[in-house]
Image 1 (cartoon, rainbow, N blue to C red):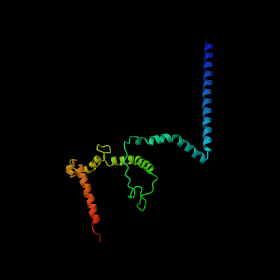
Image 2 (tube, one colour):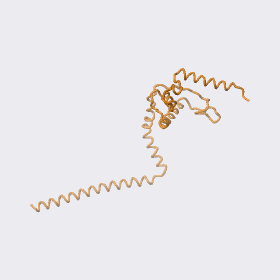
Image 3 (tube, helix red, strand yellow):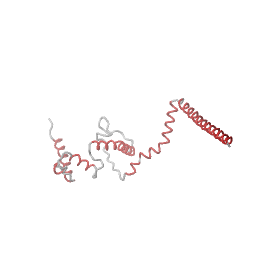
Length: 187
């Protein structure tokens, strides 16, 4: 019995060594393969590397485009106000409008600008302590800004009337003031 137990122990030890050697050989082969792949990548020239980058971009491009147009899926309607010739966005140094390649390009450009600027504007509004998610949209943000510093946070205590008719009256008064200033004789 003792000899049989010793034989089983020797057999078990031999089997364990053989299995360990098998695992070691497997990992050495994988390491050698990985090493050879890395060496092959290291000898690539810059053209081959840029090609690999472009191919990877081409593979992921459909997913990138799909994700970039997701916000546009929620657009219910689009209003296009074409104010070319006014100095500002898209204006040249001389004050005229820059050339455009078409309505579709302008629309896509505007959507991309909005998509890039929205997080920045939202962060800025939050940094200023305004509530970007306030109900009522920009009117609520404007009220919040104007009412900061009033005692009760009440529009009447600030002397501000937010009714539509008051806002229209204010806009027309501002326009009339500008017209009067432009009609005044200059020296």
